[in-house]
Length: 336
Image (cartoon, rainbow, N blue to C red):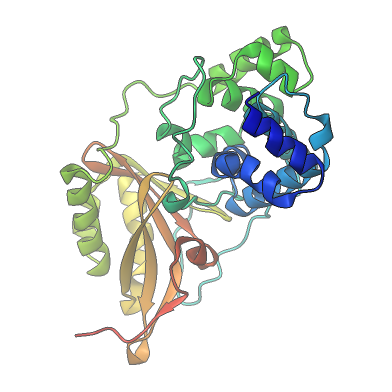
């Protein structure tokens, strides 16, 4: 351990809160992202992060320096997340409650109703941390909504092992120590998790962030959505396009089915303005319903999942997530 680090730890153990902050601040964002991957909820991740830092502050005397401080913090965070997952008191499903909008029958029911989006602005410096040699996933893929959703369907121990090994690249013996288990148990859990989380081999990757291809799709989507142009919207969708709406369990799959859902939203002359942002490394938009007097009320956040030059999925979140993206609950009078 470097002398500067040892000095900070000594001061933190003596009760120096600023020394503790200096020690832990470089790891704060990556720990929050880690908690988010495990829990799928932005709010739950923030709670787990705060629990982690409090436990680290109280238990700093137990840090013996055999592992790095970063590894020690990941151990605490992982186990706090496992406790949350085992408690099973997750956000319950809700019923559709927007008056005047009758939705078509869903094609299936979604299981991960507690899913929340993660603001890209908080990813700066959080997904560029040091990855171990065992990492198998690109950092952008490992924060995508599709990946985080798939993680939520794994048993808690398998979820933790896969994230620690394949996303962060910790070695098997390090993960075994974090989880108080054996290397053989880690290898077995990882094998089962990888089998359950097989990635489709034939799916087109999304265009690069901020690339001309991504910008073109996004611009076409905004024009179609704000004009309530169903025909134009349909041309942007893949054949197997999916729309989901956590915490509502409703999911709509297939280009025509998704088009029918959108038509129901635009019914009775409802029109929306979109404010761009980014979530989970993906294009996203705050949706604002145009109302009388020019005031526009925030109705939710849409996150687009792209495949090649098409939209493969749209995930709608409630308007309660807007503040996390720096978006207001309502917009003023629209200028002509």
